[in-house]
Image 1 (cartoon, helix red, strand yellow):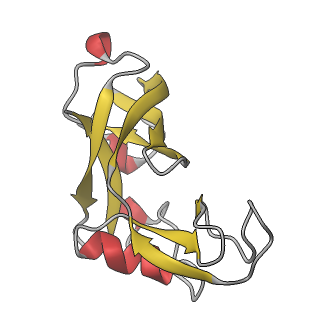
Image 2 (cartoon, rainbow, N blue to C red; image 1 turned 120 degrees about the horizontal axis):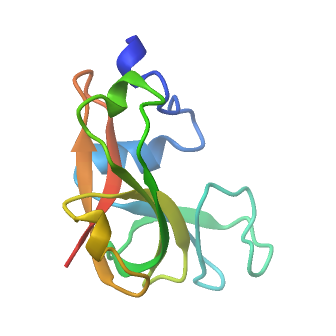
Length: 135
């Protein structure tokens, strides 16, 4: 992996379905086969009922902005030419809160409670991550 994107997590056996989904423009999260609870990040047991009957499902990709912050300094080469970066917490319809970036939005208009939807950021090496934009 080149230095420009080395900050991305390396997919492993546990999180590979998440990254495989992103490459297909799908936001995949774990869901419990017993109680139906959704989970993120990756878990070994359901955080709701303790079951190990977990599988991966495509989430709606819709949610609301819970909180955000503006990154105004270059901490990584990826930030060059992309400032400000809006770091965000998004509450998904499935009941999961996800750390992400908010894109396609003027930081001055980003407000908690605004509706957002998933989109995907692609990198030169083929890596893809979910990010969110206002709807």
